Amino acid sequence: MKPNTRIIALTACSNVNGVMPDLTSIAEICRERQLSLIVDAAQAAGTVIIDVGELPKKSLIAFAGHKGPMGPAGTGALYVGEGFDFENFTPLIQGGTGFKSESLTQPRQLPIYYEAGTMNLPGFAGLAAGLSFVLEKGVEHIAAHKHRLIKLLLENLKGVPNFICYPPLNDDYSAGVLCCNLINWMPNDVSDILRDSFGIICRTGLHCAPMIHTAMGISRGSIRISVGFFNTEKDMLEVASAIRILALEKIS
Image 1 (cartoon, one colour):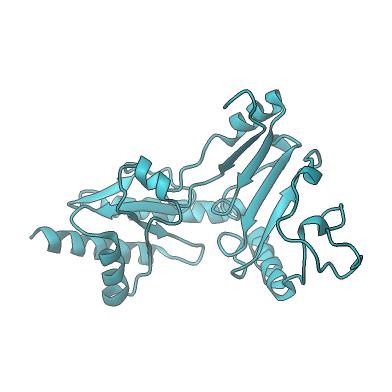
Image 2 (cartoon, rainbow, N blue to C red):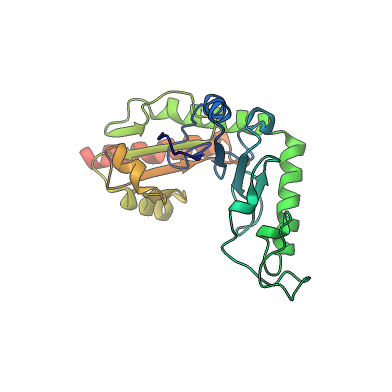
């Protein structure tokens, strides 16, 4: 931080490797220095509990609807803390509010200040249904299920030749994300074979986050295996078996 720092922005959970920062400690720093805090909860929402009461009043929390909240793509939400000076953050898009049409700018009140144009009502209905399901099942229950599956996957990947995990193998993956590589394979080739030969879908490449890959020393990208609430232990055993087959085939 610098003397003129006004905002700290960070992700609550990395979409690349599932690592989570100490949000409580960072929130305390923001409180002490009267800084605004912006939290990207795209990967965390629906899996990691974020208590807004522990955050400074000058906080924003943004999340996407299509991941943990189980909503449609193209949905999301922004939580605005009561102490956040939103009027100093001009919307990028203005107009088409449906009322006060004579004004060329958004009305200075929330939430309409950031909601220009026609709202995605069908998407919001789907997001509401997804959130209702998450609340019914319980975030803790969903997180425990994902944690159990990732732990099972890791247990079955131990000792696989040329398999590397970022960060190193452990069972602290409550966010349900596993970042890995097979050293002698290009990530995209692995995903193609997993899809075509085993019916397993995973994400490869830089995951919209090239800088973290550079920091981890894997500029070529990585394989990201994400588990959801509807995945099973059988799924994890099949993934581990497929990766083991690829690893042994490449080095034989």
